Amino acid sequence: DVKVTQSSRYLVKRTGEKVFLECVQDMDHENMFWYRQDPGLGLRLIYFSYDVKMKEKGDIPEGYSVSREKKERFSLILESASTNQTSMYLCASREGDSRLNIQYFGAGTRLSVL
Amino acid sequence: AQRVTQPEKLLSVFKGAPVELKCNYSYSGSPELFWYVQYSRQRLQLLLRHISRESIKGFTADLNKGETSFHLKKPFAQEEDSAMYYCALSGEVSNTGNQFYFGTGTSLTVIP
Image (spheres, helix red, strand yellow):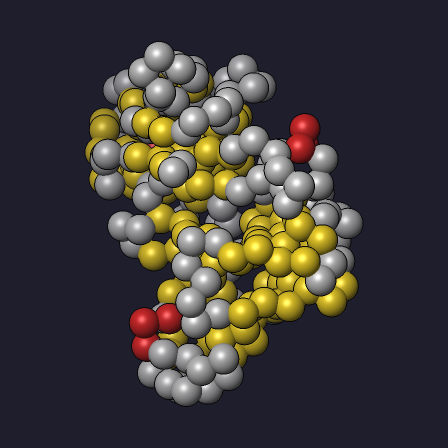
């Protein structure tokens, strides 16, 4: 079974803090994704990475950055957290072969910014 | 622009009744369509994809290119079907892979 692990289930931070959300996958997948999940808005893509050190902006990249130094790890960084970044964050990974076009999700990190 | 529309945020049906969750899409190409499901306190997971043409947990979905729809159907709803359902679209592959686009989700409640 593919395993996508997000380091924290719940996180509480203060406005202005730098926040790191970590995601690790154990299936050697090339593609990794960060989404935020909000009621009524569904999943919105923040960033994705199709290979080590490669990244592409998604639909809502403002206020976020990412890092992919190793294939198995994809980090989401909030440089200066704001209250409107309070949300559920989901990480996903996918095999690079387009025929195996299935995303596998982590359990999510619920971030509260006070 | 690619877009997935799920018109119903909430849907309630009685146990044993048929259920249909609607999904419409717009895409200028040949997309792949999916349904993902999130049960309470569980992670988001794939339910089915249109190219598999299979029934999962009694659910089916047919891609209608003329109506650009991919509605999810089950003839007899069960209480364990209560969950959040997301329709998703994957576009054609580029040199940077291909993105997924998710709808806003439909929360299904099956009433005992």
